[in-house]
Image (cartoon, rainbow, N blue to C red; front, side, top):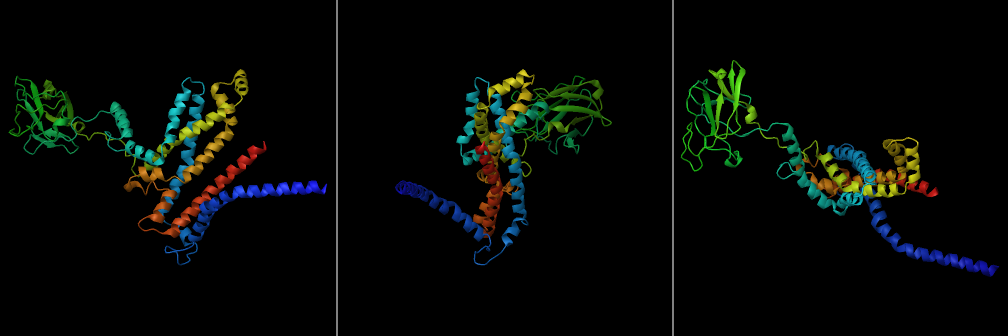
Length: 436
């Protein structure tokens, strides 16, 4: 009996030694790469900028008094609340909608593809997407296209008369003739300031209508390429301002209006006799240039949008895997009992997916707390303070032009304290699931 007991003790001891031998390299790496840096950061956070003098809690006090760091804390709160929630909801929608679609696998592959792109590459992509110029930025190209579909755009945004021209400013961005129009005397409306490339493609050389007793006129670009033109004279090479709107105004009221043709000519009814001709400001309004996505007010939502683009595929794949494990008989039973698809989704599918949704949400919450690359790449220098987050401020405080390793270490400790509750919740949830 004692011999058997001795053998068992020897076997147990050998197993513990082998386990310790296998764990030792991992423990050494864990200590060197995780435990020591955490301990050093905590210690360094209590010292001043130079690291020679003990500063107590001064560095932590600065976290809640410095405006730049407070902005980073506020933005981190926005990230934690919105980015994981939006990515998880989109992942849930994609997973459910593609479950019964024949091409669902291909769609999931396309949605998941951004996960293969590094944060740096994604930041460069979205920096181009959010370009202000609609000719370069995809977001503004789409936005401007939609806007121009429902709102009339100006014809000649930078056109203007010269002092020698028979036009004067109205004060609201438009122009009006200096003298009333008369029948049989063609009105001349010359303008400059329109680049030849911006002229309508079907514009033709301007013509001066004959004085046939009608109220007519010509609006043209009073500029001859290569020189040689004369002001207030319709020269052969000068083009008509096609689409220019002309209004006849009497006593402050518009009595008639017309639009210049391809050769710049227009004709007004007899009611315009003795009226002043006005070129309304709608002819010269600056073209809509889209939204300033990377401006102070929208830069944080814009960067969050790029994050969601990357991580919605991750959420979709995990949720789809959980959805595949949902018992189909429960869904069919709910449908047999009279529940519609929305009720099945809300009262059966989502509750059954709750553990998976919790995993996705917690994982993304931990991930957004350390987001750095996207903000650093996408936000321009002028708006980087407005888009600042704690991980970026950690980098700027520790390695910026006015580096303060004490404050940087305090920010690192704050990030650790913010992550710990989320990790503790995740561990408790995993243990609870393991006991089931």
